[in-house]
Image (cartoon, rainbow, N blue to C red):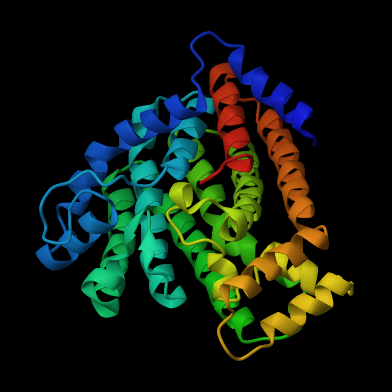
Length: 354
């Protein structure tokens, strides 16, 4: 899908009266979820509570309240809007929205330790401040808290908890594959795509499915909205992989060429390595070097990926996944305003800069 088509797709979100812009949707998601999210985190034991509060941007390293900025709240927005899409009220999906945000931040805390990332959201990562062990424990606490939030919500609690547990297992599988790929040669594009489906697609699909379940959706609506979220999740990862190479550190909060520096086998990297082209062979040679890549070599690696066409291919893949996601959304017969706002959110995911 080209830029013109994206503009027309996003414009459809302006139809129903009162439909919100992408920035308004994310603020609404953050504002809706924040009180319940804070209340849940406040139930944790003091040491992990402070680390979680730091990671979420509520506290500084000394435990003093601050406003350092939290995540975008894309997954909570999916849950809230999916509930509305099937005719439910947003309040019934707040526990689901809180749970998926807790599970997402569990994964971020662990990912930062495993990847050795020292910066997130424009400040030191939790493990860099508190140590790897305490950060891992804080992540564990957030995951168990996510299940507790769903269990305490009543309604279809058992089904919701199983849905989240299954998604987290897929997330773990994807992350395990991601780590394994760093030590392996010959990773295929299909393997890399399946890794991304687990690492990012599973939880986004779960967010939409949990929202639809809380909102009283039919089995078919839940299935279709899960597919909508899964396609969006994979599109999100394609864009995330582009930002991991070419993203502006002032916007992403991560160093330039961060994924190349750690020699991640991300989607555009693997597409280049498997291309059997001149740029592919040159990138293979760079990735095979034992010593750290210099700044010049990192720039060269990024140029090789661009020359191989993998940068354009990644964006085109994200745009194609957007179209597939919108097809699943339309098939679910959603309420018009919720459909428009989910379309707006989907467009944001595939054309973002952070």
